[in-house]
Image (cartoon, rainbow, N blue to C red; front, side, top):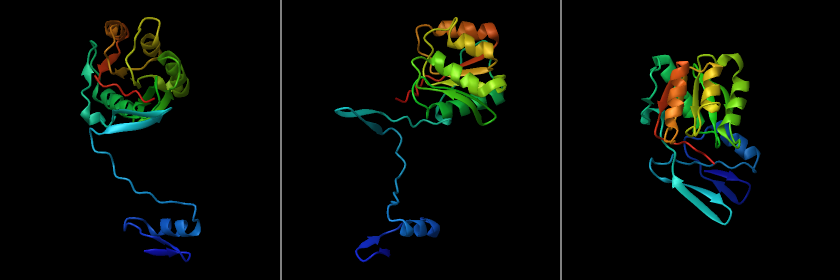
Length: 194
């Protein structure tokens, strides 16, 4: 227990470092909060105008996901690792999210756009020439393929795409990836964060 001023007492968990305690004592506007990690399967709550939105918590890790190869070309081990890393990143990005990653590094991301094509273009611009051989992950399926997001991604030089699948036009995305020799992975899990 630490006494702050003449009327305030603070109970600290033993794991809180002394340096943090000193900072806290010096600035009484700071607050230390301790929160435990959500258990898997719990509902996630988000405040919306006039109420609350309850939805399943997005608590799956890359190890929980089955990356199903749906293209003719299967990814190499390093490409699969890049796809898993990109998938882990894309779940933390807002809607219509696209992440491009390689070698445990996010090269570019685009999000919050009216469509995934615009998000892709932002991610490609950020990734620059490093996009060649990189993995792309999308938080949602691609409703169109030809002359759209999948085609532009394939033309940019990505080697593998991971997406939930589930569109009535999934076959177009598969055909497009086969045309360019790009691996396409379906996860059957949507990571949309709004």
